[in-house]
Length: 394
Image 1 (cartoon, rainbow, N blue to C red):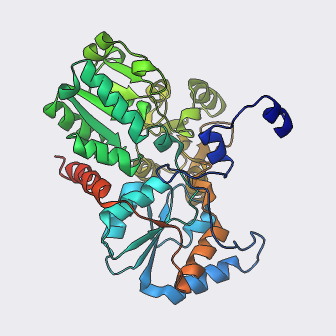
Image 2: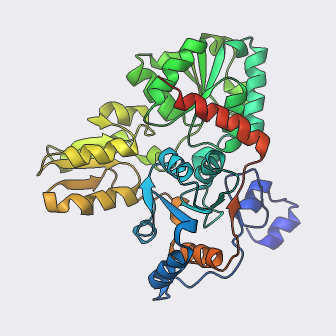
């Protein structure tokens, strides 16, 4: 439909449509839309040299963090690599670094800002590097959900547990309501702790990690879990369903891990006899149930490091990491393939490219602070409380 036709029908673009078109901005959203300044051309043959020169000029003033899902062209400039929480803690452990350049996505940079000192400045090379999963739970939606739980008479029994892949606002909500944060590595411990505090858990924002942990690790049944859909009245659930549930799962998911299917598992087993299927717990329950091994990004890396030469692996996680691991272990005769036939990068992670990194480092080297991620003090205080409860988990 053309713009003229739209105007004739008097159809007004929604705020989300305007945001995606880059014509509006929502400072509370995981998505950003602006990148001030002129980016160097992606075809510039001197990009690598420029990044090295700017990083060398900054010296100890800058600390570059690279998430496992980043492009190789960016990872080469990372001082440390890892998952989101490890990187945030690494940043906090470098108080002498004035600039923390986080090559990841928005919620990760927020976590780094929460954990670092006031003197440190966290920078995200591209403000549009968000997270579709984190976007699936807003502060307003979660507050409305809590009202629904209150009306059902169960709010006092519910302990919120929020995945690290959530906005600072959601982490703050969790801290304010007596809950904790979890990672894909410690979700089982977080849920055990939560059930010691209350009778039910509200798990945000990834339904699959919550369901897989509850059923696979804690021995619950699928019937113990219900899915709260923020786009339906009362979450699409009756008060009776909420009262009967142990796990109230937010209707969110990872757009990368959610792509893998049971057909993907069956197909790779047929194509590669003897293959080991290793998947991330953000995958759907039927995929996790059909896999040979399930674990976090760090678990996946360690499993492949320990794997015997000549073994075959199909990995269900982000393609940048899978490809990097395949190249790394090729010399050891370990065959590593992507679980799905369809190529699937994390589109928002991939927004951090070499031109954005060069622009960021050169701007900082010239004394210009760009793309700072800063969490307000009240939100930071409650979010930090939730993170501290996670760090204190037995």
